Image 1 (cartoon, rainbow, N blue to C red):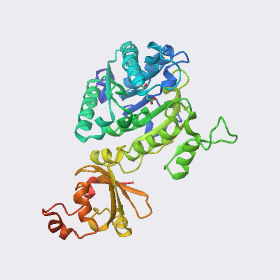
Image 2: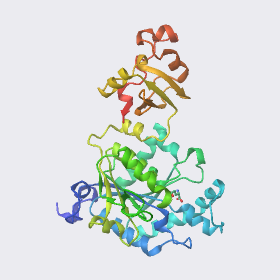
Image 3: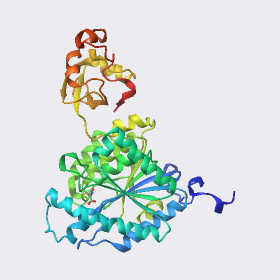
Image 4: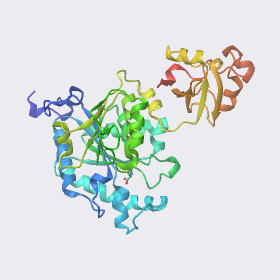
Length: 390
Ligand code: GLU
């Protein structure tokens, strides 16, 4: 088959290959790109039209190489607040919801127009936290985005800010993008930001801050670096970017933080631009486990003893006998956090019992379950297939 006859999905992504480009990105077929508000909107609250056009021409190039691209774009609230003439400063929740409903139209239109110039179709996908936390809705959202990619459209995802209240929202698109990357089994997640990666300390404030080009593993030291940087970097700050990195890498997705400030930010990155690369975990888990691990909400906690902690590390299920205490408000099938005796989170899983029944059987042998509950439930509190070790 001549290259011209190949459908995009059959073409091997290979064109962008500068010397610096790592094989892991070079071969990335499905890429999620998160675009922060500060890149898209200028100080007056107006869309940076030229910058966006340059980004979309990068996207068109990647798409032409046979890669599937999902954009996760912020900017709805920022654009809408100007259009509504809302005063500077922090918005009330209902004001930001109103602003998002206005700004999202402008945002979607801006993407549509520019993608169309490259013969690409924009698809608007608005999701809430619930759409990714609840398994059935999660599968639904995944199905829709897969279909769009198969057809060759470019999904442009944002949080559905208009309906998401403060308790049940992502609030930052860093974690939303990571959740989408995990949901779509992406190869690479790129967070385009106003900073070119992670530093050992805040570079604007402290001398001797060193840039980290690679993070093989997210250790407590790495988390501390992000914490010290605080909210100096745009809306989400470095802390949410590290949380995003945890979600993505655990799901087997490589993540990059790079500066998106200049024109053609993706090409600049692929041509060797500065970045921090968070390595994906070597053993990607099943889709079901990815969903469990990436969840932002948990309904309760189980504290386990040393013996159970060792058994989990060996790949065993969690039995009621190894649980010393529990808390929260969970029903059967809800996600709970499992902590070792020192309080460290060691795993997450779907509990086979609601809290009332679970409370009756913890510390007890599985053989006693039917006598304690009056019915024969599962032997394991959390089956190993429903559990992800952290
Ligand atoms: N969803 C918000 C918006 O479109 C942005 C959230 C964020 O700043 O990450 O305005």
